Length: 362
Ligand code: UD1
Image 1 (cartoon, rainbow, N blue to C red):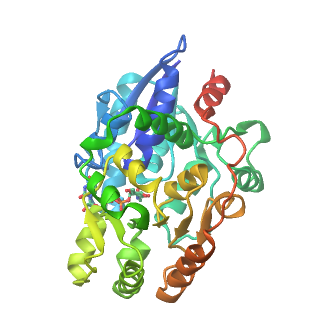
Image 2 (tube, protein in one colour; image 1 turned 90 degrees about the vertical axis):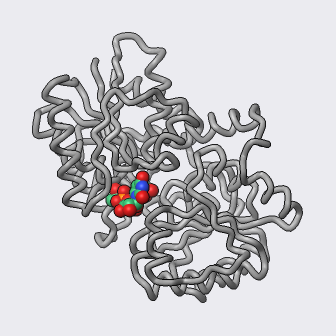
Image 3 (cartoon, rainbow, N blue to C red; image 1 turned 30 degrees about the vertical axis):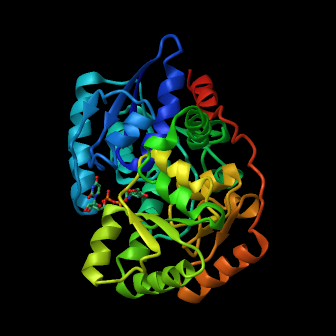
């Protein structure tokens, strides 16, 4: 079986890594890695390939940034040529980014089977580009690998055949658990951010990530979040690796962060984990970090009105706060006062999702 594993943006790399490593030990399975080039800066891409011990991609499509249409179209044109030349038996896509959408459409139109890993998640918010990507990809996929029961319910409600829907756990948690072990074995003295961890010591720090267009592309919303961050920083310093989109919008809007909101460059997977796993709490609008904090029991406040990953709120350590100043501050005070939800680790988030996926596909 020849499989193309597609990845393009930062959160994809964490999801293909366990699939790639697990496949290496299996007979009659050839896995080729396609990097669409949606993310391309060293910190956004190669740093992850290094940390996750992924090989140089077999195909690099060099799509780069652009409007949604431009980026998606570039990926589609380049990926079609790869499929034409190499005729895979299966295209495996992960998550919900533009690369996921582009490659699933191309494959399906060439009558190549498509497997979607992290299928079925729904925020029911069509202003979110990822929601459109998820819905379209699921509309045409052949195999659905699902991380949490809500995803199974959504797919069945949308009419998917029961036998094509598989609750397998979460490949991103496979990767997380592997990286927690790696981190324990390595010398973290080389991390540039080590000094902050040492300096803040007992007092602790908040770890922040922010990049959703709905939070950073609207001046009023972003300004409200910055007001909340500056207020929180008077109580507890904030470590903030800044996504390129967010850096650009901070500058465009001329927003001022307090000196206690410490701006960092985008961090590799391990250095980021090194910081957030010991944070007092995590503030984020990322999808993945809501789940990773749940897996390690770190309190998480999500700066969004909704989540396509409800299990993190129902069972895990996640609180949905929205993006308004007062709501963020109320959630922060609540977690600081009572330590936040302890939560439990969802069923099958045990480091074996990639094994289950290959068992089913083979
Ligand atoms: C994308 C995904 C989002 C995911 C996020 C993780 C879509 C629709 N969005 O959003 O789901 O959560 O990645 O980071 O697929 N840029 C750089 N260097 C890079 C990559 C991007 O400077 O290596 C800048 C560019 O100016 C670009 C902007 O960041 O215009 C946004 O990048 P893009 O990939 O379009 O979307 P993200 O916001 O990263």
